[in-house]
Figure 1 (cartoon, rainbow, N blue to C red):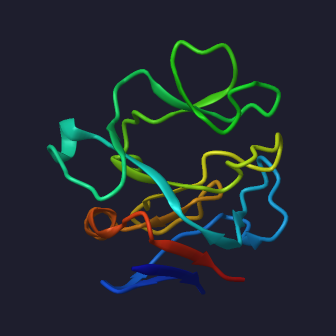
Figure 2: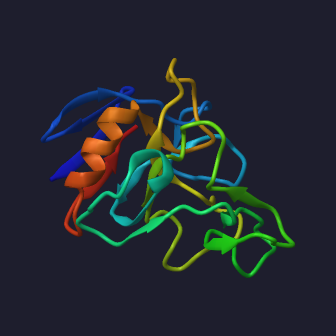
Figure 3: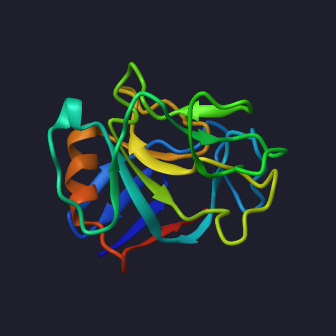
Length: 164
């Protein structure tokens, strides 16, 4: 299965979904904190999810249940930049365990992962959207039920194409 993000829609074999992208649009030159979604072709590395809210789920790629101390480093000066971390953590990092539903399930997009270039953007995920599809920090986001269905279908061959 391949995914295409274009014109605020995510297209897949399972259907067409309204999606949110970075609040400042798409870019071919992502910079940390620019609130833009990086255009390009990607794969998915891992799925994180809240079993306490969604129950036990089975996926076709590696997954991890999100716990209260899980996070993702977004500090370009830190050696763990754009990587999974656990709190307490001395540098800037995003909490994966959130009060809202946005990260109840998220798929890690392999943007800026091999090699990791400090300042080129971090924590780029496919995750659950806000109810009004408000722009993201740079991720792609879809409605919760669609996100769960899509995450279960993603496998190691799935490609995500984000087109300007």
